[in-house]
Image (cartoon, rainbow over all chains, first blue to last red; front, side, top):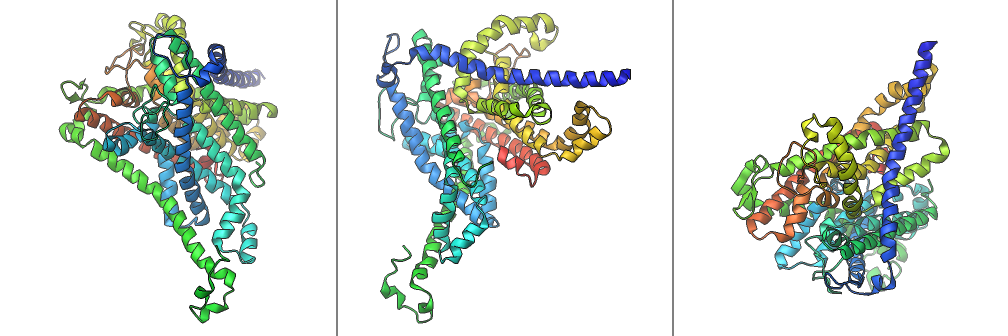
Length: 281
Length: 332
């Protein structure tokens, strides 16, 4: 009788500890978001989004160049990464038993675990070292490399969910395989693929390490993809580690903008999947 | 494209003319389509091969000069051209182990609670919230770490640890703020969502009959978890932990901002340190000599090999327990 009570007590104690673990796990999220809003929101203004950075020590200015730079770098990375990822994903789903499928899947898994800084070094030795100057394009290539495995795996998983009968129906109507793929299978899974892509974009949008010695950062507004370019994550890093109070304020505001972009992309991804006809679940 | 097959083409073979016009382009279209897909799929292994090749050739200068002694020596002097990566490797492993020591109990607690005990209504929201932690960019963790976490640790947690556990050499010495322990703590927060979500998938894959059998024998719910659920999911959970280790090893920005960046090995966790990723991040754009670049590329190569080994191990373990359920691949 007594033993039973002890056992029940132990069970309840462990459940209590687990609830404590949940609280401890959620607390950092709460505090990070809280501090971002507390310290960042007050610095957000029209100027912040539209003005250029001012020299150190002066007040005012904005991060317009970094916002434009991030859009260009991430956009270019998506232009490179998404077609490759989607194409490879379709291949892996359509030819599940091919040796190339096995190899691509394996390599994508390896790449998914590769630290982004290593990919940055690769982009440096490949592009920056060869042309002897920093380049936003090298950063885009690095980000694209990080993106490909993610896009590929979601595309593959989504296409696998398409019922075979749909494919057979199209083939029976005389569609060639490529049209079956492009106008029946892919559109059916499009919301899923869009979700995967948006999540991948959300992840690379906040990546800093691969841009450190590729895009490098810049004080000016630049549209030349093969030159150094500013980016929001780089701004956060430089300003946060810099010595000026004003810079710190800007770092918080830039981080808040970055988080909002990432979260919006995540919400967009969820909305896209909500409309999917095959991937509800 | 299919319907646009020119008539001239159609008369090329008597045998083929029985195939309807609209299908004749199909074989051609299929071939092009396949070629494009094969290119996309083949590009991935080719790029990885190229990455390994570039890192290998980029680090030749340092490899030839230092050989394998590189990983065992501790001098890092760019001016004198002496490079040894031992403190970096040590710092990488130590900060990741600190992270796991904190993150594993927490994430397992959350994962077990969410799969076995929590009321249905809170399961999805809590998992979603913790998943959000994984969406926060590394540099934002670094920012928060510099201005919120480190001042907090320096003022309260570190002195407390030194007072209570000061007899241990790891909790002695001056307190700076940026330190191995601070980096380990931020890493713990960053790694936790990964360990949690993979362990949760693994636990969800445990058949209900396991739990029912234990409960039927009179076990409390906690005893059922310990005796029937965890042993079944053991290798998958170990896989989840190793996967978290892989994440921690390669984490760059937050660690760079919090670890203090010194090429030293200190007994105290309050002392600053360095990691492989942080050294690359800090020194690469400022390196002046070819040898310095080569040494940093060598570090990148070693880091790559290390994470590949760790991730391969994790994947193997997760596949073994979650085969068929797709839990492993979905969670990654």
